Amino acid sequence: MTRRVAPLVTRKFLFALLATAILGDPLAAAQVYPSRPVTMIVPFAAGGPTDTIGRVVAEGMRGSLGQPVIIENITGAAGTLAVGRAARAAPDGYTLSLGAWPTHVVNGAVYTLPYDVLKDFEPVALIANNPELIVTKSALPANDLRGLIAWLKANPDKGTASSSGLGSASHVSGLLFQKLTDTRFQFVPYRGAGPAMQDLIAGQIDLMFDQASNSLPHLQAGAIRAIAVTSATRLTSAPEIPTVDEAGLPEFHVSIWHGLWVPKGTPSSIIRTLNSAVMVALATPEIRRRLTELGQEIPAPDQQTPEALGAFHKAEIDKWWPVIRAAGIKQE
Image (cartoon, rainbow, N blue to C red; front, side, top):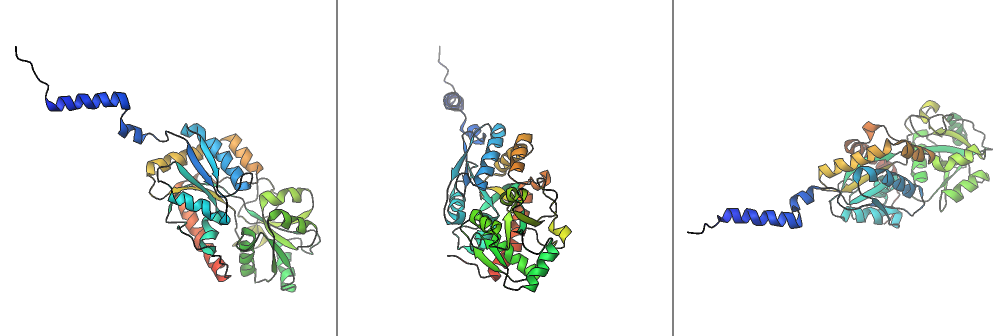
């Protein structure tokens, strides 16, 4: 009896089936995301506000992703080293760039960068907003925003405002304030918000444009005076402080916001997966409580989408770059 030989196509199918059984389907494996831990690059040191926000959100994303989100702190050059590393990473969803207004807006106007803060990234989600507070020393003869502006105009170049250095949030927001109010005062640079606040409390500095999370403990202790919060809505954690809109300066909206990006070219399906994980985390009561305790305002769900972050990011650049460049702030 003649043996029947299996056709070539049948043999190939059998070999493919055997390989799949042994090694797994490589195409299917490639479509499973994430299949290993994800790294979130944080551009500042461990223990700081950006790092703390990143760790809270990363913890909240783990359940949805089914994988841990590992924090990697890369410090130096005002966050440009970390953001540059994220820009060069593979666009596979395993490297996330946590950033903030200073790293993804201000640095683009202050530094000559080897990456583009807009074109080299895909937006994932807006995570949190931390509005600034306009605060003054207790002895300043002004109880509200109109009184502060009147005092500054009556004392041109005599008032002092602390800053955390050239191009810092406190410096740049102070420049915009001067432009909008037609006032002039001197900036006094410090090595950080801590020593700047101590001199404000001591009465050696007149005013400060400071992150709400840093000022609130001193306000609650009665050591300084709050003039206004630089947002359109009052702070959940300090609802007694009026907004700049209510106080008469509606254009002066400043927020040290945080967002999440991935390298350009990351597949849209991965971006959607990451965005969903962030949104689930931000809807979790425990995560919301922890962020609120840090003085953070959580954006509404329609502001947490990739499209919303992309539009907001572009609008912030259009708003702030002309201010920074007009002031001649530049570091090579």
